[in-house]
Image (cartoon, rainbow, N blue to C red; front, side, top):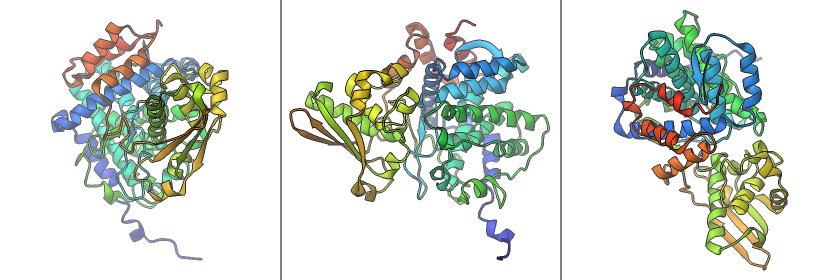
Length: 482
């Protein structure tokens, strides 16, 4: 039997909790560069859009039944409603809604061995936590929380989550953990700690408590369990921060060492990649985030656009399509698990559906991601004509970008090929315009808000740092009549 490892063997797994807590506790609005603020405005508007649209998704009804059965103190509101709930449950609802359509943004990787586009959805856990607690803080103090305070708390959580995601071994995701659910806990806890004004030791304890709750497995992809992960991250982040504020203790180095989160959930990891780089630069700027044009995993978007552009360039109609084959490597194909989608949730993980939506509707938005559209005869028949194929040549090009090509066979005997653009739409290399981002919000708000209400949200979001009372956001997004 080999001897147990010595303490020295775990020395490389030190310092991450201290760095994260120091950053989260100390960050103030005045510390943020202009380029960070520009991206914060975009991510917050995008987060509000997808949480609003997600609040009417089918999975929210059973979640609300559960939440309503618990009851509790009227502390904070949730997206879509002005009714107050216990703060952690409001964050649970908002966080789940924000990921219900899988339309929230994606962190890009920069560390060695990390598949491009496969880290976490960085906005929703800290945004749900910070926005929810802004409502609670306003109630506790009798003073509204302004935009600068919200921005600082959001940035604290966003940066902590992204840096921890970079530090953990990429095997964490490849083994089956859902990073938005696991690492999202640390993002939410850091945002909540900053919003509550916790000092560094108390913030470290909040991170320690979050480490004991961080969970989420990819087995639940294609079900209501996937957005549940993000909702739980927001909920548990608030719970951790409020417990720490109340004096509850936890290990102040819970990310570190032999029994820390990096060692047991990676396994291993490399804190040196990020330990001295919190805010230097902010991940929200470099390497940046992808703000999604489609409500599915970012790995699917270049292929969907390739299909969309090929249809337009060749003047194709759905009736022209005989067969479609998507060629890609395992980084693109392995997360996409359903050959034929039968439900909207399965459709997010089915190239047959995603390409069918583009072929049939020329788009893939809220109106196409419904059970009715997915199960329609036209969609089911088109899905049967679409297949994926592993391509060793593309695999050998590496996972540093999202690469694929589309091959279309037409009924008149032609074979048409188009490579996906590695600088895909929505990425930092080809970002959505402000007008496209507002268009995405309007799609999410369809049937829920008036144009005047949507414009009022834009007016706040594009100058979020100047908002005197961020609670106004809840008023504008309260489409439900409770």
